Length: 369
Image (tube, rainbow, N blue to C red; front, top):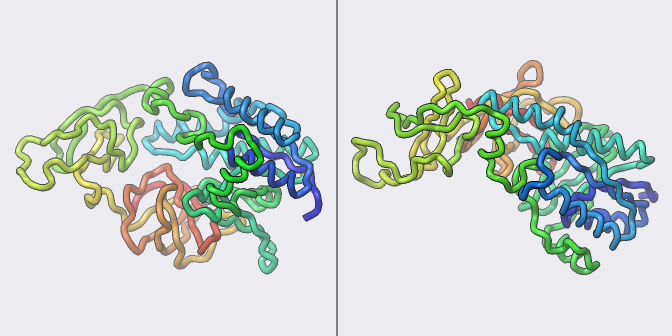
């Protein structure tokens, strides 16, 4: 590849740091940008953006590249956080990282990088891009490290966005990325990976949502309709949730002694009309298993929907690919039926389709089938 001016999103983490190093090693002109996407509580113990910027600046110093601090907080609030709150208030469980990639990292950030004269942008995502000469289209591929693959979060990227995107660490395993960081003396070589939603970080989730969504307590009922507790507001719970229900170890009156009596409780349904949280006992309860799902707001990497037929899909990030059949509907909707029932299919999450290592795109789950 010809030498290019490439703007790298430096997050303060090890993956983006090694990304910048690899590109510089290849002879490209590399510029780092630190994206500030959240500023409501900069001084809180959970908001690590100040520490992350110091780490990103230290990396830029070691690599000998420029770094710019850019504030996208207003864009983020309008394009990602407002949608996040709307979804939660509607009783769904959104995935803001998917929206952040489509609207901020590969839109607002990409636009900013182009204004700086960049030919491409790069991030520390574990994914790959390939140009298919036969179809004359770009393809989004899984990262080579199966434990770290992040193509699920990137499935809404378009041909125009992929044409400008590079993911150098997608060709590596995480252990190799850490080894490289160590070898070249990066200050954040051993920094632990960030977890949790991008703007919430490690903070207690319910406490955070509480600031923005009003509580409306209501009954928790089991499958027989018995009231066994009170929930704090349906928005605060997600399907398949096991922790934080406040009914651990509870044995409903009249329950028979036996094997299932101490089985853990899981959130199985949320009924907005009656403000009821339905829970069941046991991980494999039928209410938690869905043979199909409906999705809407589809976004396809190729720019058009794949033909109906057999594929693999993920209905949540931490999940093995599941064999499925795609049937396309109208107006960006589609239906997936699975070879094996899927666990805790959750409205608001993304259903992402794969053909082998190629990520085809996906949509937002509207209901379990």
